[in-house]
Image 1 (spheres, rainbow, N blue to C red):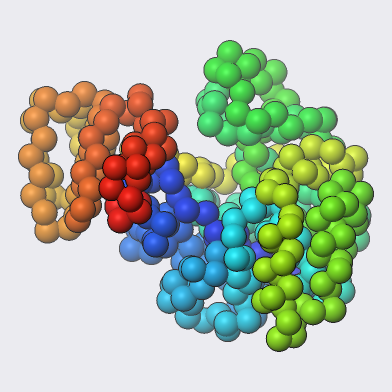
Image 2 (image 1 turned 180 degrees about the vertical axis):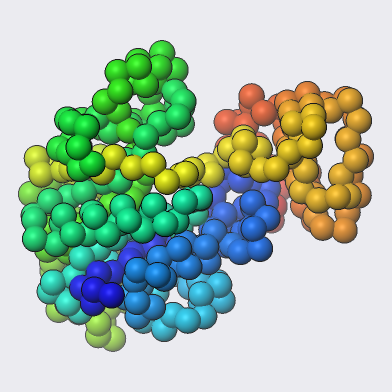
Length: 357
């Protein structure tokens, strides 16, 4: 394996869209929502093990989740967990990891990945990562992994490629388009889904911060000598207090002129909603996705039912519904209304406080 390659797993999200199963105390990345026998973060770690050495992993997460990361990936050393004091989106997260790796290995390559996605064809995925890593090793390029779209999905960002080569220069990024625009993208054939997976050298992304996010660059550069020392925690606390919350896509990728995309197809999903879980799950003859054999459905179609193991659920007369039951919360809503989950959370928080959030 190449000693200069590092996998940076971003694992700081709170998984709001998977409430009530995903909670602030145990968000989506630590759950086995697809019933694979492994949590999302464990699956992500194991996915990269064939191509990344165990000591070359970094997990960036909220400090509240540090112990859970070590519980799910006990092979890691505590210093491989980078703890954010507060969430500030993906740009500060990536800047933090870049400066840690720059100090550890000036020739470090970063493979950035979310902690909670699904990839079905890992052999193809490894081949894509290898090709991307070879491309960026000796080039000052920022490389995004794009996915060949299978439908006009409005929940994904899109990347317009400039050619049909496996790696091509990016024309533009588009965030979550309308259905009409997404349909146009599919028909055009020049657009890929943005998988949120990025590959570049640590020095390349730091230069990009200097040019496109100079305030973030200045904050992290000022504490560079404290990274890896006892002063790091306090220094990072100060940086995160001052830096703006912004995504790497909006802050750098949409502005830089050295951005490329890999045209990929390896069975990817961000598993971003209960609807996507229904789509990916094994279903009965009535298109119902049921969490276990204790779910009994009658005159019910195209629904998702998730209840605790050992609990019997009897569902009668539902069409296109989501039913999620936990120890303290039951949610029943139409699949078409799952974008309202944030409102449900706000209402429950207002009426009951944080106990059920």
